[in-house]
Amino acid sequence: MTETARTAPPAAVDASAGGASATPAPGPWPRAADGELLVAGRPLSRVVEEVGATPCYVYDRTRLAARARQLRAAFPAGVLLHYAIKANPMPALVDFMAGQVDGFDVASGGELRVALDSGMAREHISFAGPGKQEAELRQAQAAGILVNLESFREVDLLARASERTGTPARVAVRVNLPFELKASGMKMSGGPKQFGVDAEQVPDLLARIRDAGLGFEGFHCFAGSQNLRAEAIVEAQQRSYDLVRGWLDLLPAPLRFLNLGGGFGIPYSDRDPVLDTAPVFDSLRDLAARAPADFGAQARLVVELGRYLVGEAGLYVCRVVDRKVSRDKVFLVTDGGMHQHLAASGNFGQVMRRNYPIAVNGRRDAREHVSVVGPLCTPLDLLGDNVELGRADPGDLVVVFQSGAYGRSASPRQFLGHPDVVEALV
Image: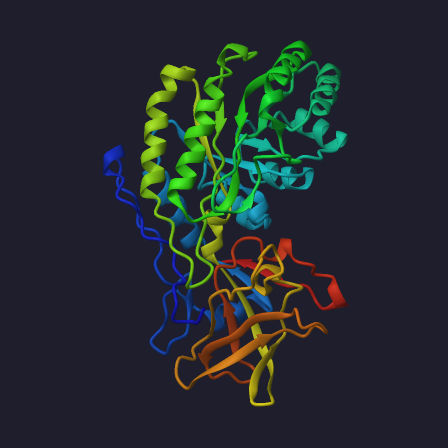
C-alpha cells in the first residue's frame, strides 16, 4: 500500500434510526501546506522532536476520542462500549480511554493493574484469559472486578478466594461458541479451543457456579477479531444472543451482562475493504430492543473493541539512517524495524505478507519504488516491500499508519539488543 492509499477510518454511519446522529470519525491524517503530516494539529517533525527520539509511536487523542464518539452515538441505549486493553496497554492511553468508553476488558494481572490505576470503575472491568494464575484470580476477586470463567478450575479457585474474604467473586461464563466468526482474521471459537468453556459444558458450569456461591452476572461470547464483513459480525452477534437465551432457566442469578465480543476490523492494505458498520448497528438495535423482554430490564449488552478503537489513531515513526542501492534496488535502512513493530513486518499472524500503509513525511514528489528495512540481521526485518514513496534520504522520517494497536507491546523488543521504542500520547 502506498502513501496515497487509504489510511483513514470509515466514515460515520447515520444512526438516526436509533435516535442519535453519529459524530463523524476522523478522515485521512491531515497535512500542512508543505505536505508534512499533522498530529493533533502539529507538524509531525515537531512532535517527534518533543518526544525526543526515533523510533517512536505517537497516538493522537483527538482521533481516539472521535472514534469513541462515533460508536457511542451510533450504539442504542442498553449497549455498552468496552475497550480491550490488550490492543494497546500504554498507561497514558488507557487513562485517556477511561473517559471515552463504558468499561475495560483485561487479559492479565498486569493489565488489571493498569485498568485500576486509570480510575475506571471496577464494576466495569472484566478479565478474560485461558490460563489465569491463582494469584491473578485472587487479585481480581479482591478488586471486585468481573472474571470471565474459562474452566471449572477457575470456579474452585475463586470459591476459595471468596471464602477467605467473605465476598462472592463476580463471574461470567466465557463460551467457546459452537460456530466460528466467518472471515475473521483470528478465530477464537468453534471446534476445540483453549478459550472459554465448550457450549455443551455450560449447563454443568452454571450448576457449579451456583453450588460454589459465586456471583454470576453474565456471559462472554467472543468469536474472533479483525473482521471486515458486517454480515459475519451480525451473524455472530445474533447466534450468540440466541444461544444464551437457551440457558435462561439454568442461570444462578438474573443476567446482567452479555458481552457479544467485537471483531470490528480496520483496513491494513489497499486490498482491504472498509467495514460497513451500518448493518452491525442495526443488529445491535434489534438485540437491545429484545433484551429487556428476554433478560430483564437490568441486562446490558456489551461490545468489546480493541484495534477498531485505537488502531487508526497511531503512527509508528522511524528515521532513515542509510540509503542503499543493491543491484538497482533501493533500500531505505531505518532505525526501526520488526523488533518494535512486528505486525507491520508481516510476522504477527499474516499468512501472506502485505504492506501496511506507509509514507515519507513531507515527501510527495520524485516518487520511486523502494523497500523500507530496519537494522536487524534478518531478511524478515521489512517494514515496506517494493512500495512507492517520495524520495527519501538519511534524516527523513518514515511513517507507518494503522499502528495504534498491537504495536510496541506485541513486538520482540529485546531482539538483538537495540534500544527500545518510545511511546507518546499527543
